[in-house]
Image (tube, rainbow, N blue to C red; front, side):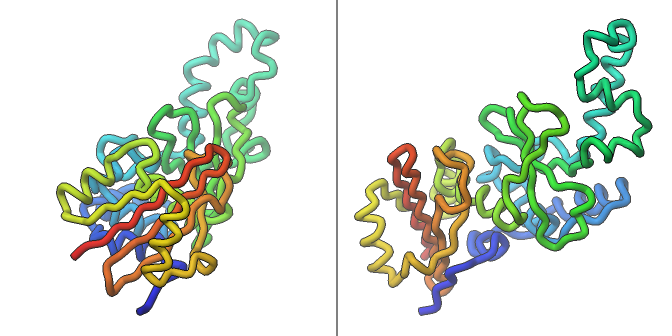
Length: 266
């Protein structure tokens, strides 16, 4: 039995039956309009996941209900346009405001203070954080993904995952474990006839893994946005392609919670 201990995000989408849709054409239009080339991994993942209902409550923008991709400088320009008259009338009051400071610089010098980011998602439940890739990193095949919290200054983007692959796996783990929403279970179980088994006991999860022949010490790991610690090792996962099976074990020790999901399709 061939167990994939390190499946890629695209491998998992393929296993789940996600295929290219009209998302490919929309992404090509975006590239043409902005004279930019998206990383192939981002392009292919978004194309395959586009408008799949299980992503309707996900933290990436791959459905018509989500905002479109945009660049963070566009948002800065909108803020400056909205507030520049107030800043001019009260320069002392807004002297520490980042956007106010940027408004005094030509756009080509903004890079000195903050990178331009391609914004690819935000947390669906609250909308308080935004995820993006630096424009200068778009030529990398697997670039880092950054996060910006609404309470922080517009320049305070921080690295969330060192690679896009890890970020997309984090998204998949949260979607499939149904930590915040049960959309994936509803769609895959009721509409696409997947067997969706959820186990909340760690001992039982380990026994199930052993019965399936899975060596948990070999499984790949990724993070979760909905765990006590947003670290890159909360979740373990693997695939058994010949059985059309996906195994996910989320050990949120900070909240003393275990979620094991076993997806299989006859």
